Length: 231
Ligand code: FPP
Image (cartoon, rainbow, N blue to C red; front, side, top):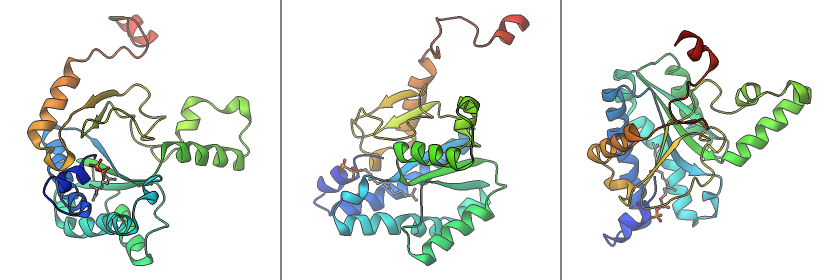
């Protein structure tokens, strides 16, 4: 969700106001997903690298998640939205941690949309965490398959992303779902995140629909052998 700082600077506001505005924007995109039938939306709210930002900015970013979840509680429940967190929330104050864990638990059966909030998340640290847990579980090297490895990631029970959208003209993955996004389509737009409207989202989806996804194969080749047999 890049461009919050630039959005604020363009209005002579503190950067933190850009984050507040950006946090409001998540609602519109989540509603659009439900509308369209997209089952999973993941937003990168705070990276393991964001700790290096000025203290007041970190404080605002820390407070925003519990704040927005409380403000949107009724909407989350009325719209059957499941909340999940990818990353470690230990850094949040106890009351906020409890509030986040509570809403994660209470929405576990919701089905219209899974909203993953990547918080204190980094793809590399997620992979290291998976490796450590595999070793702790005493898994033999020859038993480590891609599926088993993926089951040790935060995203164990959700599909890999089909589309990664990066706003504010950035063209990098920046440690976001680096394992899971291996075959995701990438879309970059100069639009700043707080200006990322439903129209902008529709544009991204229209571009995605035109992409030919080959997953390393040649065009028109069936995806799996069973397709070949049944086709
Ligand atoms: C990057 O923009 C944005 C962030 C580091 C934080 C984004 C977090 C939110 C919008 C809060 C999300 C809240 C919920 C409830 C999911 P930037 O600061 O790098 O902007 P710049 O590139 O213009 O400086």
